[in-house]
Image 1: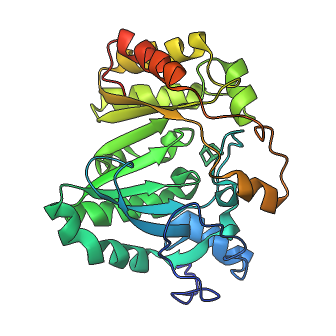
Image 2 (image 1 turned 90 degrees about the horizontal axis):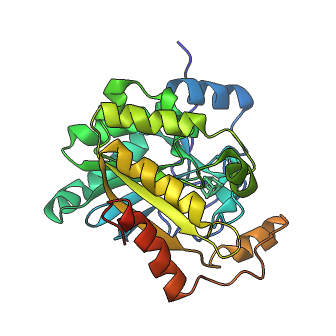
Length: 286
Ligand code: SF4
């Protein structure tokens, strides 16, 4: 049986827990040999994490413990954590130590009506690790949520999906052209397919839409996303997230061209108009 060598709990003195996901973290998994990386992705014995953060009130219901994975297949122009795009920027973390980290907080999370959220990056880039971690957390009786772009939804079996109490779908665009413009990838069929599958399985969902002036504030796109979300019948909430510049320094430090350098956050009026579009489709939106 293939196994991976167990990495130390702390890498280069960088602790697994961070004050916030806006902490810049790079190159932390570079010591892991390629064969171990391949085995890790195949088995889920080892994951690569930017960090764990505690006390989030915005990543699912109640107060959340959040694990931030590294690696993403998209290159969203508004991404505020581009250091999570690359797998090996993350801290190599055994499944066991990730489970242990959640266990540490499990009683408190349950008492506060909160739970555990796996976010990223794109968590399903490490689908085996994600599926096994969710299974273990579910066994603790802790509410589970994933924040995902949905592109690799087909990497999860129906039973694995049932271990996730809430899917928070970050939908970037509705048309292929706009999807290409925003994420660098045109094909969003997989995402729509995954959402339909979640609807068939009657899994609760939240939808999220990042409002970026001059990029995503396109009424037809928002109407398309809103109508689609409403048609699923399982979307409990839609959130319009105003663009911000908190991640800007990461683009600069990583030396990546940042097209939104001059973009300002949307006005309160344009956020309200966007929220109205989602409400008009029959969704509970804020
Ligand atoms: S899907 Fe998320 S992590 Fe990936 S590039 Fe887009 S915003 Fe960033």
